[in-house]
Length: 432
Image 1 (cartoon, helix red, strand yellow):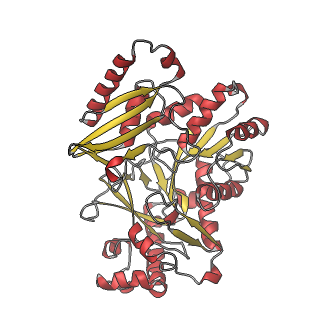
Image 2: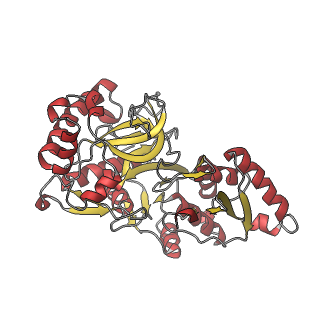
Image 3: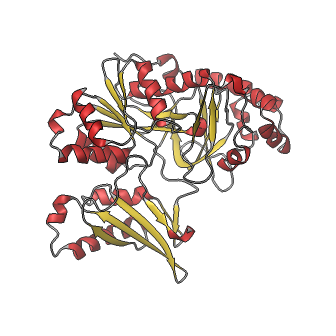
């Protein structure tokens, strides 16, 4: 029986959820106005006061926050509670610039772990399960978030962190892990290692909760097949708490957003205009329960769609689609928007694994797009004299998907470096 299922929230009527959001938003705006001078100044510049925000319908009046704001205000400029009330920090990876530090009160941590517990429960987790957490610990939110959520559910929790694959597999076999939490690229690597070692019959996994990087439906099905599990997506940002902002249920048609803690909007990334439900655009979050680091209208840069279509799981929380790319780091090649997930989908459809690298360059004022694709041991052994034809086939498939030409180079198995965290998929030499 699901121990951490909260139907009074997760299955509440739209009217109930909206009333809760209205109440919490009004309180949060006042909290930020009173304690965060940086954001109060942005409100004043836009001519907005807390009295102007009476409900979610007024949310569009508030100014946006971006990662640039977080960097500018770093470290204490957006802090809304005294340091003596804060018990932890977490931090972004810093892969796109200066690290951003987020602060947590104990109440913030409790609510964050509640959200992660909902995600584990939605994946079928109970106090009978053994949950192996292979996300990184420390400053990265993945490990601490899922670790705390696993405790809330009552799972036996293995705080493995990332890396040391031999040890991961030893614990997975010896303790009969049933739920795996890690990045999808590391899950694919673990699956590969399990098959290489002949351990498939000794693995008892039933579910995986994978996030922190983009992954396609094709990659999901491949991981599910290789590990014999059901693979669930989870979404979150350090800036908004960490994983657990949204989670996938058994229907696997999008991730339910924890609307009692976060209000989601979709905007036009160019104009900032709020778009109607069902529109594709940039995801914006407002946290309405976080005390220490409450962000209002934070632009995630993730591109997705929101929907309230009825879900077979019974949850009424709005769903967000799997992010379709990012408005700030998507590749624009020869004027065409290119997302790595599109390339990944083609490769897996053509029988290749999700081990690839995209290299973009500019030669003689013209963009070039190269895709290095690692062959499986099977197609490598059968490739004698066929490499050129195999590459031509992939070139044609990518041209059909992207609308532009991409050069393809097939490389031997194990050629592309494996990742125990976020996979390095893109090398854009135009920025070097």
